[in-house]
Length: 164
Length: 100
Image (tube, rainbow over all chains, first blue to last red):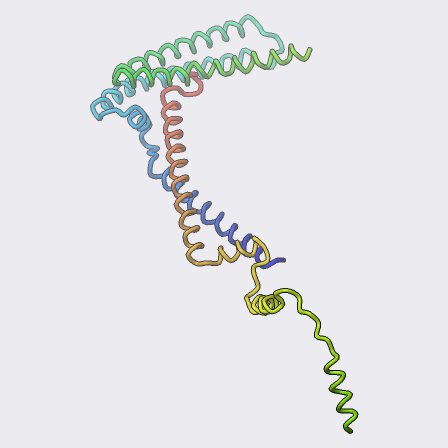
């Protein structure tokens, strides 16, 4: 093989190795230094530029919300297992199954309302502009989740109708 | 050699016509001699590039640029990833999947 070509390919390989090594090392170092897995609320302070006093208030709000959230999770899980038992191995949707679905839906709606109320409380503990941004972000994560599913399902249905 | 031979030789020498030199013959001869003495020019752009890569100053400068560029880009990506992870942790904490 041509000597110049070997030199060029070798230089490219060395250059790529230097770049990749530097990239991955700095990426990992930065991720490890910046993230604090122990503090679940750290993101709030960084993202919304909150003062320590505001964070103390918000931490108290979260501590008040946590047991309610845990209880709701337990109730939803219980209702889901009741639904699974009602569904059993049968192929029919019985009246009991329908009832359980309604109850699960109601429970989820209660839970979402409680969650949104918590987000409103937290947003009010922030400076107004940051509070609005926080609320918009949280709505996207809680309500947007269902909107994404519904959107994807309606898109899918639309495609199917189009092909028929 | 007798005298007649000498006369004949002189006659022949006088009769020989010197051919006319092409224009700037001497200059062209010297140019060809200079070209032959000069080091061979690089064959292609690949040889020129290889020559450039092998220069220590160029090699160190390129390595430094790549190192810095990789570091800056990695730091940027790392901070974005850390921010994304922190956000995901918070969302999982306040809105666990079963509740959404």
